[in-house]
Length: 176
Image (cartoon, rainbow, N blue to C red; front, side, top):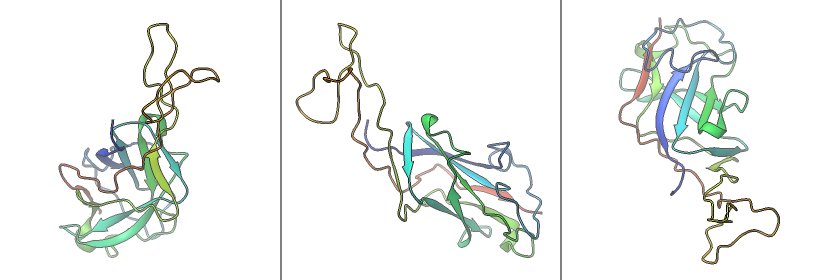
């Protein structure tokens, strides 16, 4: 299966995962944002686990060439079982057009998330396979696999996710 990889990125808010990108609605900036006004959703190719402090930087300007604000991982908005990791803009950030260069915010297609003291990794209790006798196999990446002695659960090895997003295009939206 390899390491977890981001296959898609959308930008929305707490109630709409695609409101600003790719749907294209214009974000109305405010002098002091509310937590969750802007949420970046990173979609991994498999379920993931997130431990500790993980962030992504929201960029600004037409070419998304400079940093605007750091968005922080929010477990309550994420759906890790589906591989969706959410990063929220903090409260009290000025998102008015006077604060945003060229009225554009977004995420670069070749950007990366920052793990800081945290880690995004392969989810550790995925059922990998069934044997012919309808039991489950233990698969911890070792060469000698067999049924577990404590109830036939299948485990993966918790490989770290890829840092780079490697998306097809930048994810950006307009601020008014």
